[in-house]
Length: 250
Ligand code: NI
Image 1 (tube, rainbow, N blue to C red):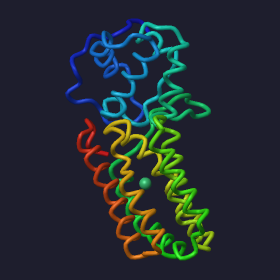
Image 2: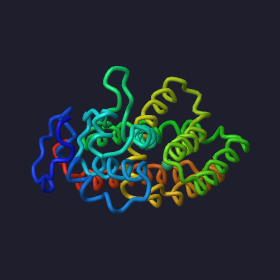
Image 3: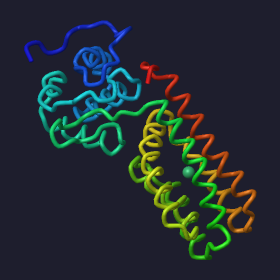
């Protein structure tokens, strides 16, 4: 790379082509965020996160360590550490041949995912709820308590998944549970995006508590109403998230 940072104005119309070079939007992001951070890792991580969450660095963009080190004017070590942190937030993936690549998420995929979860999870809960044991309910309560104290995005996604799965676990339908688990894993990525972008209060622990309470009372109808509302809330939050992003085409 010949020049370091092209001094570009804020990109008013960037290309939506996946895989485009990150250097143009990145240049203006770096210029804007540089004075705000104390450590190099913090600076790199926060700048890339803002660019990814806002859509200015689109899904599919490769992030090469060497190029980033040049652009940010820092060594490879903080770049590696920042990329590792972004991976934990599901904002980038490491692929065998391309290295770090910005995760592709889209409003259409999120809406599709919501449709599938709305079909599967209330069905799993209805089958499972009458057979939940006292131990299952304790484990679900533990997950809620763990989420209250958790501030790591990757762990948070896992705890949320664990909470939901334990309530579905007595459905006695391995195929249904397999599908539920598969789609929850995909949702985990969106949840992390959402929490990183919109804040921790979006986890909706009130829903989790009310859901557990309904399971305690063996009130299937109420439990399903709460779960449906919980899924719908996540869907609406993600819709808002995508509306606020720069690339609305996805
Ligand atoms: Ni949840």
